[in-house]
Image 1 (cartoon, rainbow, N blue to C red):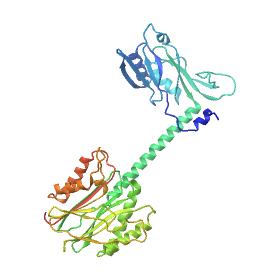
Image 2 (spheres, rainbow, N blue to C red; image 1 turned 90 degrees about the vertical axis):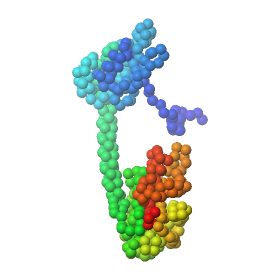
Image 3 (tube, rainbow, N blue to C red; image 1 turned 120 degrees about the horizontal axis):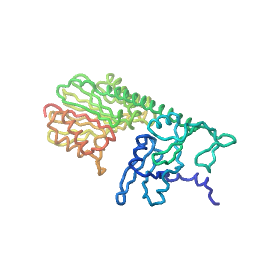
Image 4 (cartoon, helix red, strand yellow; image 1 turned 60 degrees about the horizontal axis):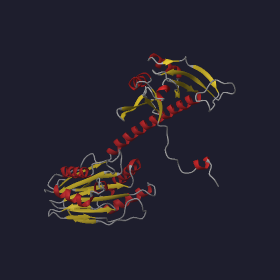
Length: 422
């Protein structure tokens, strides 16, 4: 069977198509340009030279819907005789009398004052004329000329005016909604900022610092410092699956669960994290989960106990310049109701440096699509190991940003802890 225009229209989307410009023949492009810009309030669309100094000048109404190309033909050409014609160009405004008054004050020549007409539209007529029969639409119109006598029609059509007003209302409502959303997002950003540690528990044998640089106004990365008493400090870094507001809400949920539970399980990290997993599982949707690294530092014994819940390996740089990777001891939090974890232990003595981080550090990529990676992170830690924890943290972030100078795509979160004197 052959295909009709309707059946073709129902198929794949057609390539983009629009009217580029309408030719207006003028005697002097510069004078005409000033008329359309200064008197009609049009914008300059483009102004370029071509072929032996000839000039392309185009103007467009404020909405940019159509471009008028101002052509200055040679005097002996057929196009020159078209100057001063009825252009058949119809300009639509929602308020003809107001536009008429404003343009008239700027010196625009009108053929007559705006008239109210009920007219019948006929496709064969470019500009609707008053006719007998049932009115198809109503409106106000007038005609004006440019400085070369080219004639234009200015109309306000009832139905189109209602459409314009509806679009204005929709645009205003959209703008208000965007302002409200931005305000709400700013409040969320301030609230989330308060979820990160506001003070650092005292720990005389440990120099430590943390940072979270979010890719968006709010995010799903989390770090925390927990005072466990008796010279013990909890260091926590987590990463919620997802981004944006949803991840931020889950991050707040995880933080609340961890802080509400840790006091009841000060000496038992495994019991603490089992409780956190249960709450996180019960209070989130099935697909929600988080990776998390929990480390308990004991300054009295210079020992580190840790649980790595599907998170990236922590990096422990020894005083002899070797690295130890503290890998996963269990799976992620929140996916499984039945969940348990193993406990890892390691010495953490004077001169050692511990770095906890999220994938926003190692997965930052450069223009060649290379990731910063664990190896570069290790090299950065080695290079700056003699610095304080805060300065080391700052140096790592700076190296990541130099490696990946474009827009940040993921949160960058780090904790650096240095035991004793380095």
